[in-house]
Amino acid sequence: MHTEITVRVDGTAHRLTVDTRTTLLDALRERLGVTSPKKGCDHGQCGACTVLSGGKRVLSCLTLAVTQDGARVTTAEGLAAEDTAPGRDGTGDGRAGEEDADGPLHPVQRAFIDCDAFQCGYCTPGQVVSAVGMLQEFARGWPSAVTDGGREPRLDRAEIAERMSGNLCRCAAYVNIVPAIQQAASAGGTEVAG
Image (cartoon, rainbow, N blue to C red):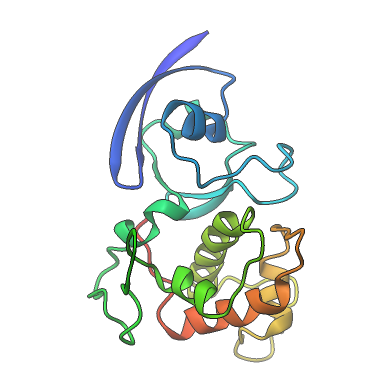
């Protein structure tokens, strides 16, 4: 069975006819040519396919495209372009919004480059998108399994590791991913359109 959906991906609306069994990941990659979300495990266990839908992290390999009718989906490719949160002028600490060969970078993308938080790069788009989503959750005051309810939450190593636990890196770049997320948090990396 096929159905028509409209989904806004990285700021651009797309009308698609999809089989009701098509995943969001396959619709993005095969129908729209958006290749930053990666097909890693295809079982929701590695996080390489992480995107934001309505500002929340979702595993696009487990999400049916038909459930995204009318949704705003942000991939790693669209983070800087979608970054329209109130009060955001694109300059931050002078690095946020910095131009790269492909255009402006989101503070999390910039931090991953600055901290060399990737090796092969396959998981990097999912890591970056997940980091943006988790920083938004942290900014909203959402606790994690390791948040100490008796004190103001801090983005220390344990807190970041717990919040990013759904994203695997086969190259083990975690030692640089955590400092990158801490740098991005201090540079305003929590802001992205929902």
